[in-house]
Length: 266
Ligand code: ARG
Image 1 (tube, rainbow, N blue to C red):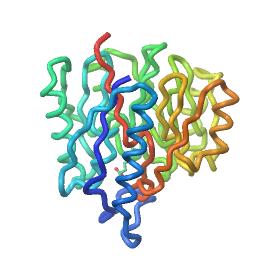
Image 2 (image 1 turned 180 degrees about the vertical axis):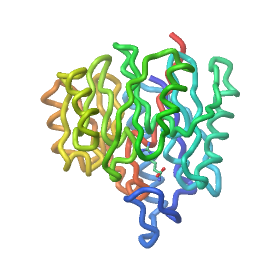
Image 3 (image 1 turned 120 degrees about the vertical axis):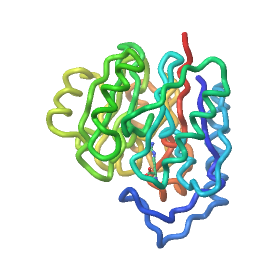
Image 4 (image 1 turned 30 degrees about the vertical axis):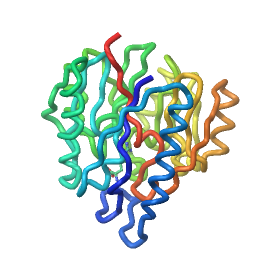
């Protein structure tokens, strides 16, 4: 797999755009950088390629690279951030794709936060998309048009789980994992009927940001607070790989938020 990450060189919490952020508690940037480095090494140790997007001053949330775009089959649907504090990150991501010859980048007209609210289930050619807090439902239709894949819209209802990737993740070609309580009742019914074999997480798992994970279909990177959830993954046949990433939680993110998957043309 190929991923894009951005080091937390300018990471701070000096504005509040989700319930996890608190400007009163200072961030330990050294610790954040060390944890991020360990995460990158863990990804590479699994045999994957990590591209690094240079961090930019004045963009403290840029470490959450998942939000910068969403790609499927070599086509990249760019992000358009909800809050002005993060708006400029979208250009940095666009520049990354435009420099490489093998991507077709499409600029969005609708507000959407990239892989924060879009997930791809490869075996079904299906995109799962969240709305309710950040990404506009109109962006789901736009993504479907741009990427040529069916998009299933899911409504998020709990502000603690404000991005889809805090409540749901794709584990392999067909299987997903999610915390039902983060979704509206209709969306829960849809998920249950489409994914009867999903690995279900409970509220404690979701609060530990266990679902903010990255899976290569076998190995699943989860944060070190997610021990109980890791047992659920093991029981389902996956191999949990625990990585300490607590300092990034101060920004309201964990493993997945830091890692954008680059899905090249096949
Ligand atoms: N502070 C960031 C924000 O609120 C955190 C983003 C987390 N990223 C994610 N993919 N869930 O936008």
